[in-house]
Length: 318
Image 1 (cartoon, rainbow, N blue to C red):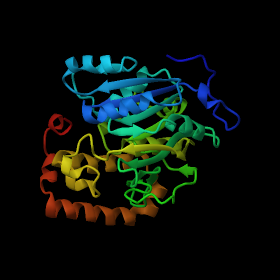
Image 2: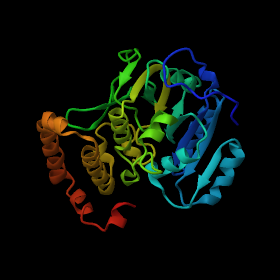
Image 3: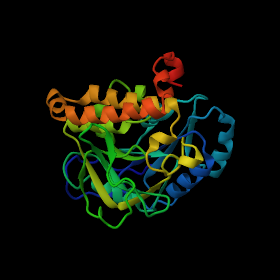
């Protein structure tokens, strides 16, 4: 599917983004109502040098025939078991032939020029390994993410999350990382930060995997860049929240106890893996305040979350 193109330079300067090879990886649990919109938007991209790899985490591989008939150019892979988001992405990246890797949730829709515009961000300044577009909710008014930030209390914070888009983020520039829902990476960066054959830490399954990777990359001197003209739309929670919680703020309310426990655990895992002693010293007080608020909420309103930590590991991780 790819045309011949030279390898991309890591330096800024004159480039031809149209010649850049891109692999788009979509991980799905076969939420067909969302997935069809996602794949249809990819078929309309103005950048044509790309492949689509679909990792099917559902346990009904027979249903792939309908997908293959409707989207013959899409490469569909399934193992008949749930690899979760991190495992699915690792599998897709390992198969990818592109110089740039676009990781998508199946509840994301992209404007036709998204890939074309976002690619330009990789060459805006040296050592850009991650690019974020302007990601809005499906109402096309509410911001979902304009880049990932590392908060003082050491959580992943989506810049602009939940704000009405009034053009306040219509300026390109550096950010800390990119949202896992629409995460564009340079393959060379992923190869540098990986552990063994794993790009995303497979223990995370989902939640905080994007911050963990961004933090690792930042420590190795890579940068993340925001391109405001690259537009996409995300149905926040469309893949795993109940209908009552789709697009709603304060996501914890709409997670079941198992997912809520994983969210908390993955934050601690990210901090332990990436924080420096100096960073811990400067941010210890905000972190403790945040932890008091989180565990106070769990104790008062979600005591079932505690029980998850005493379950057998195989039950907690499935």
